[in-house]
Length: 221
Image (cartoon, rainbow, N blue to C red; front, side):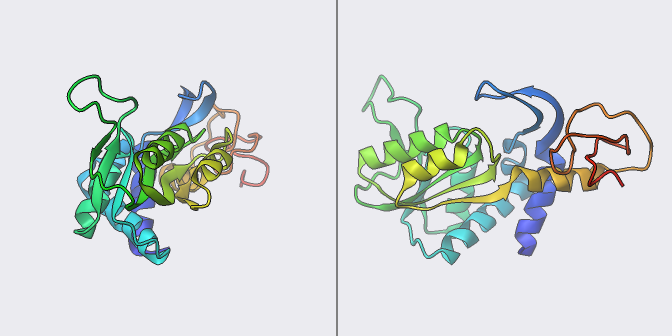
């Protein structure tokens, strides 16, 4: 893992990851929540986001002309990557066509036939990423890749995005469990206390211990 990616992981774990009981936009519930915008809109977080996404794009040889995604989770990522690159244009996809002016759904870069990468912050069901992919193709862009900052690995998110993006690949910078493990490492202590959640804070398996936070059998020591 590159130094920039490692630092971004630490920042996400510190600023964006929370344990508790949360209702998700998918309608489900979870014992954790990740608000990536607390990191992607942070001054240093924005720098790291731009650098890490750009490194991944270049390593994969996609050679896009622009980067974009569905507002508003994608907004800070688009700006960060565009500014960091000094060459990639940015565009944003509205959730619906605006009802005034030109009525367009794509804002910013608008060159039909251009190679583009679709980005998002968190992928749960993948719905926002899929919407952006479909809107980009409907406009006339050629989607060469799709990326998210954090993949939750649930609710069929990856299969949904992979199906929509094909033949372009889908890449996640981090998995949610990467963030969880780093968060636990940052907040761990030695004080015994009852487990207040039902799953292990490291791997998400059922918790069996009270050390000092909820742990499964494999991680209780």
